[in-house]
Length: 119
Image (cartoon, rainbow, N blue to C red; front, side, top):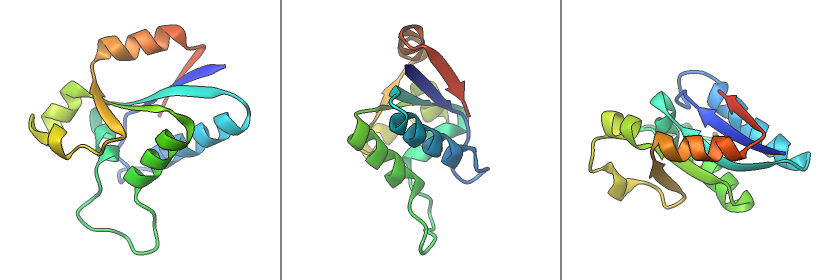
């Protein structure tokens, strides 16, 4: 079963972003695939480390990067949400595992998936 995951929340505002990460790991353990995770609204902040790191806690950005590399999951940032929150020249500082995408690309992936889950 193919599942598109959409993350709307920042990694600091609630525990939903961490729940989305745990869900993607569990989906792969159950034999499902997650071809892409689409970050929109405040979810685009998952692609960037915070200004202050918490000692002993892994970086949410790094955890998403590891997940993307391990499973070949595309990590897509909504280009409009990213531009509104980070500025238009932020793509040069975007981690290599993340790429920008528009809503058309997100809908194309959703059309090919069996389920879409939003966090």
